[in-house]
Image: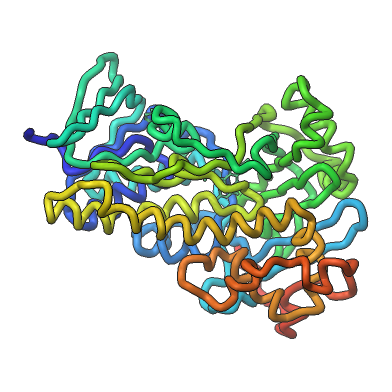
Length: 429
Ligand SMILES: Cc1cc2nc3c(=O)[nH]c(=O)nc-3n(C[C@H](O)[C@H](O)[C@H](O)COP(=O)(O)OP(=O)(O)OC[C@H]3O[C@@H](n4cnc5c(N)ncnc54)[C@H](O)[C@@H]3O)c2cc1C
């Protein structure tokens, strides 16, 4: 079979555009088929510092650094008690990544996709992948775009269709994460939110309340993304409500957030996302890899989705490049791809489970008494999850044995105070 491209990628989000970018760096020909016309709205706006390593490899770090507000830390606020604690990334165990970025995904995803295009990837927007036929000599992709339906072929197919999870759904491979599967998120964009000032302006603020958690993500242009993840108990009580009503009900339980929104003006309709965390039984098959959300989705509590997607792209391309060289696309050679992806996901998944079982909720607000735990949590919040690390064992052991899990929040309010580091004087953004 004569092929049109080395690789066909379905989906042009961070997973798909990064896959295309890495493939072009290896001189492989690649076609990206993206259903939407970019820029398009997408949720998932808070990045992690360890993504910076990948942004550098993709050649987009300078652009991102110039264009987006710096995020030096994550502040946690407890609605019921008023306790708060800020984790600063410059106190992470591995140094050199003192901040991440807050990005509006419409422009950000377009920049990533355009960059891949600039490297020679062929990108067809407004083109939907309808079907994929896998055969012994290649993959035939049926798609619709530009007013016609047609097929294209390649030796290898990458599913990067995000939470649509094209192949995972078609093959009924989706395994929901029982603990957090019925959570619901509601979200929208505001102007005039009361945000932190000075060097802390770019911090994400995460509020914990009896019923879920909320986020406040500040952008450079002054707009702020505000969203709430409502736990099963809360969303059940409000079953049948519109996203607007859900958000209103959530806000009533959150006086701290209400205060920050007193003068705020909503500039987008309230959006909603359901069908929560899942993982595909397998991330690979003959001539197939799934990358990013199409393979698995971890609850977004720690802003991990894009980090997992772009690292997945990096791992995937190492495997695809070797497969193309060898002319061997059999499933068994891709097994370690899934292992690499899952290693990072498992750390976050354990943290999320600890959070929903209450142990981590308390520790997040009172880790002040334990510098080791504090540094370990900071490192994981920064996204340092791939290299086998001593501090990963803190997560594996769980948090229930720590005295902080039963203590209230105390006088210290930031990881810098625990590490006895001075506050930076300079405004970072
Ligand atoms: C409530 C919520 C909050 C979140 N917050 C964060 C956060 O703060 N930080 C973070 O890093 N992550 C966050 N995430 C996760 C983040 O949004 C995703 O992990 C990330 O977008 C995954 O990238 P991706 O490329 O795999 O998928 P996507 O970004 O979803 O891209 C998939 C693309 O595939 C296209 N597509 C789908 N089907 C087809 C088809 N058949 N043919 C062609 N194209 C197709 C879509 O149009 C889309 O552009 C959050 C998620 C949720 C639900």
